[in-house]
Amino acid sequence: MIRIKNVYYMLAYAFQVLREEGYAKIAVEEFANASDLLAAILAKGIANQIKRGLGKEYNSKVEAISSPIGKINVSSSIRQQTLLKKQLVCTFDEFTDNTYLNKILKTTSMLLIRSSEVSLLQKRALKKAMVYFAHIDELDPLKIRWPSIKYHRNNATYEMLVNICYLVIEGMLLSENEGKRKLARYIDDQRMHRLYEKFVFEYYHKHYPQFNVSAAHINWDVDDGMMELLPTMKSDITLQFQGKTLIIDTKYYSRTMQAKAFSSKQTIHSQNMYQIFTYIKNKDTTNSGSVSGILLYAKTDEEIVPDNDYMISGNRISVKTLDLNEDFPAIENQLSKLVTGILI
Image 1 (tube, rainbow, N blue to C red):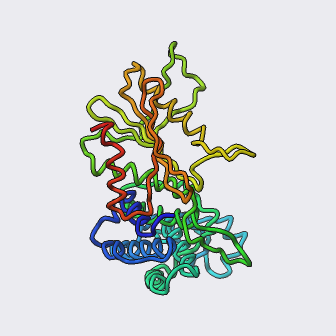
Image 2: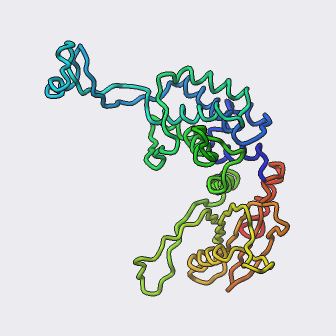
Image 3: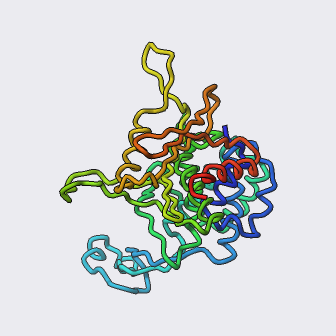
């Protein structure tokens, strides 16, 4: 289990905008669950966006109007008999704030307002913001086209807000009973894994500027240069410092250990070990032993907590556990110890 306050810290590293002064109050508040926390962040973020001005864009519109603008569609006007009303069907561009991103913000806000997991305080803040969204349409939350969303200079301030919406809708939407969608108290494992990975990446990027921090691609160490059809290898986090390399593969599971059917023996997930070993051996092309790897699990409530170091074929592979239920300074201490002795 993760402390709700630590979810905020993880979000703050993942989205640097949350470290700005405007969100300082949220950092010291207490929240009963993730829904309430995300509602508070969204309410504050939308309020800030309203002050900047809601994003607008040109949308193509076809409408029968009395004062023609744009391109007149004569055949549609005759077919729809709009001339009887002294109107013409026109196709024109409308500069509007009824954009896809604003629709996502409204859809998510309304889900949170209707949720029993969100406090009255945060619901009031969201309702206050939604006054400015009265003319914005809602979307079906299950049909939002997340991969199609692109960010640029004009909508960059929406990136964090839309990512919060993604966590709410994709990570917390449980079921639909009698037309009412319910939110979970906690973000699901798949979405938490993405946040966990980004948090660890941004933590080292911020606090260890001497490191080269990347999510590096690793080439296959082939003998003849033939790599056709080989799968892409991309690390979660690669840290490089003074000729040494540390590859960190983050893992967020409800259960850290695996056990075979009809057996009480528990082991580390085999595919995880195979993966990190493959990364290391293909990165360490000279077999120098200068490349190490860590499988970094988020701690669960299981009795076995992995904390092991292995030397395999000349390379160090560690299996460690990060306890996200500690006070945040303790989490920072854990992350610091991971790189001490390997890169420093």
